[in-house]
Length: 519
Image (cartoon, rainbow, N blue to C red; front, top):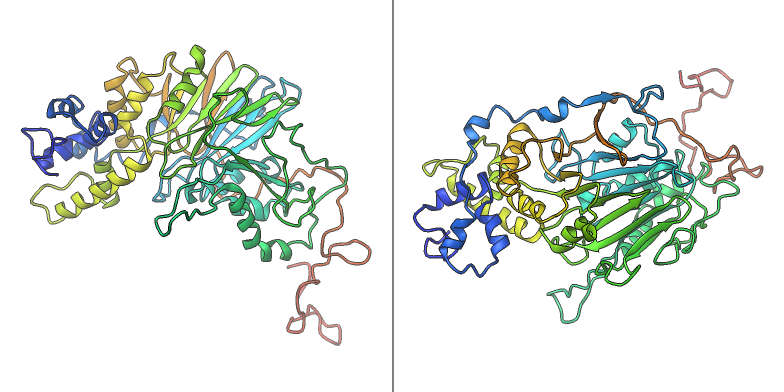
């Protein structure tokens, strides 16, 4: 940091500026995001500096627990007799199956949220919002089978938001998803490549699904000795689901087949300026309406989602810098919303020393100090292209009136130390938020929100660590013959393999080599 730079507060060293900016309220990096690159004078920058820096040495013993989550009431989602297990007819249930930002950590998987609504409007419905790496293990532990994961809404095509789509797509048909997989996501970014004049990549959701389908061909063929469809399935239409486009599979799969991959590409630049221009899903039968709006994250084409049902409203912004569409959608024309799920990241300095395996920023005489400063600079670039740091999150929340019933900070590496420091930043802008819980929480894997008009109940799911896949609930008692089947329509597990090198269960004399029942 150049001390002659107008963005550098006068009277403090580079180390002090860095320490203050990221490790406490507001933050210089946060301040520059709100003030802009053309900071007029040092006083403006100083106005954004924190008053109470976080004492990371004192917090160093608080890195391995998230006490708020640990104190929540637990329930067993696999026990139908547990009073919290059944979905009420008037309930919207939001479950966090992934909650973290890369790099990966053992305690949290990447982003994914599962939203279920009851049958108050005639029929239940459910949705997956993002599906980053590792989340399928949590879905399975919660007892959420593939048959309930057939509608996936991707906010943007970063790996930590869509990589487990491979698992959902490939293994769903082997379980109880015997119908197509529908994937919503943004259209092409329209960003010109710097490599050549007027060169544009086809980087939208349809192209992604087309290439995923091609890449998974060996898998899907090899597993197609199993049944992948059933008689009587009626594919949805543009009208029945209120879609912006016709739901057409990307390849040659039949439209009723579980390996049919159906992209619903969204015009990401739409935000509801004209009636219905940003509708992603509007199912009159279930009463669920999902709209989308553009956010600011890395590259044009990132979107947030708003789900409305039975008088309840949830917003999931996914990754974004602080921007007006998330704010305005949450204000909701002065009506407010029930649950506002918005990303938050730790400041660049915290990100840096945590990634370096340190418990606090190194001192100037530490050999790691220059490496630390270089790491901070690199992470500031990531922050400035992509994310909402904790002070900016607090400022954004202060601009939303009426305040959401519950705000959930997500995409955040939680622990007692990072959450305590982040709460300090939020309180600088929203001093009425005195503690975590009633109005503001940080998400964690297996956090469950039971949302009704009367209350929002926060729970912690207690799941088996060594469980198997969820019980498969088949949609029909009869299935269509698999693609690779015998002449009488039975599954043929031998159709695609060469048995010439097999060690048979019995030898030529009929003696048993091993039991073919597996024991």
